Every structure is written in C-alpha cells, then in structure tokens.
Image (tube, rainbow, N blue to C red; front, side):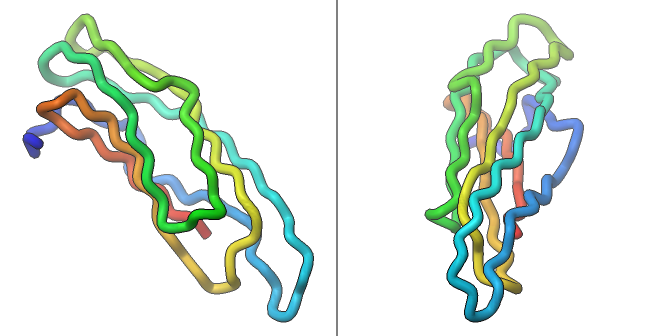
Length: 114
C-alpha cells in the first residue's frame, strides 16, 4: 500500500468509552456508542472499501457503509460507526482500526477502546 495520503480524517483518534467490569463483579453490561465520521478526498478519485479489526473480540464494530466513492477533489463523505460490546476488564485499554482501502492507498482511523 502507498503511504502517501489520498484522503484524510478531520479527527485523528476516537476514544470509545465502554463500561469496565468491576473486580469480582458478575454483571455484564452492553454499551453501544455511535460516532459520525467524515473522510475527505485530498488526492485522486477512487472507490474505498472498509476493513475493520479489533483487539477485543467482545466489541463489535459496524460501519453503515461498506464503500465510499469519491468523484471530485476535496469531496467529503460521512458515515456512521457503531461500537457495541460487553464490559472489558478494569484498567484494560485496547485498540481497533478502521481502514478504507482502494487497492493503492489505505486511510486509517485508530480507535481506543476503554
């Protein structure tokens, strides 16, 4: 993948506040957090497909669009990301990565889960 940026995010990092399990607790709480994100094309016109990875299997990450098509320079596209999951261990911080790929470029959004 080319490291040159073809698109950019308006925000750099999202912290996703999921409930943390209390020491010795047995209750499981499901938390859902939704974010609206904006990606702006700053290079050549392209179609991007989404890819999502997470270090925490219990956290599900859904993106409302599976692709973004840019037809003009400086065009902005908005999409919704939903994080949903149960409690994570107290003091644990994990990361998730959302990437938009066009075959030549990768645009990454880092997210902290904790």
